[in-house]
Image (cartoon, rainbow, N blue to C red; front, top):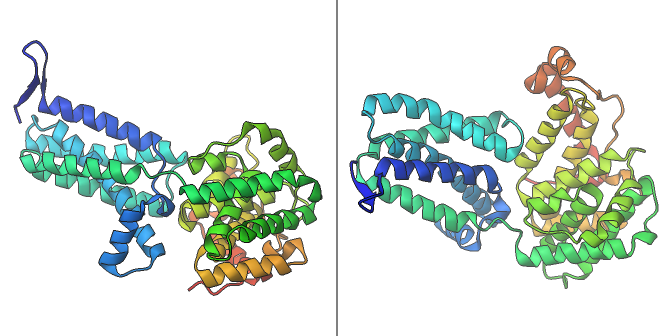
Length: 392
């Protein structure tokens, strides 16, 4: 491509224009929220569901995976186009090496942690595919059409990053209700159950009984902010009322489970992230948080925290998987008599592990001892009365 664009005094080569497009694209991948099933627009979900005759949940997942793949593939295409004036053989070396590196870099910046194994493999494979596509079409007008079409599609598809308006409103109203009735919530372990029951009872009463999943999502998101962390709202693209910041913090501080203040936070944040994205992403965030804690002066990797993370994820999956499981969770919450209905035992699980001990004694995140402990945690979650569901 040797075309030039601009006035006689200012001319830009096509390669320079593609380079600018690449820079903008990389910046967008760094800053925009990573695509999740909930953020896929209705038209994309409907199209996937109709085309492949799959359920809404699977259609949302497929939409999210396709969107992520397109976003990463575009890096290779745009990089290939920006090197279109370089000989193909030489450009291929740069593109095939640089594309996976750039893809990993932007996702690390976007996630805030190094991708786990499954994410890592996905990023590498998709980015290399994009690089090969870009190299194959870099001297063709088809490449420009392809890149432009994908860019327009990504923009149209990826702008739906907010929580749906009806869900955001339901979650916000549920949160206001909890804050307004905070004096009815005690402290300690009992407050953990009281908070869950209050959130689900109010959300379910205001759903008019037409849909069990929506009120459950609203309750989980409200708990994610109030019991978990204010940042949960930002993940869903919402803004919090700063007037209630102190009330949220005060309520959060007096809630415990197994006598610990940190476990309700892990539980609520993981549940909310599952609603906002999917269970794999929520688990990855939880693991990344523990790996981060194991570094430097952090509190160390905690398998106890992972109990709360996995319990929150199971809680959210059960509450939103289907109408039947959603209604069953509502019933279990209403009938629960102990705060340990939704949180299994945490005894005899190691925690406070610095990175060197975690790597040497447990083999790191993929070590045999770590996998054994994760299996033990899964078994405890499976046996927990409030988390027993047939989700297959």
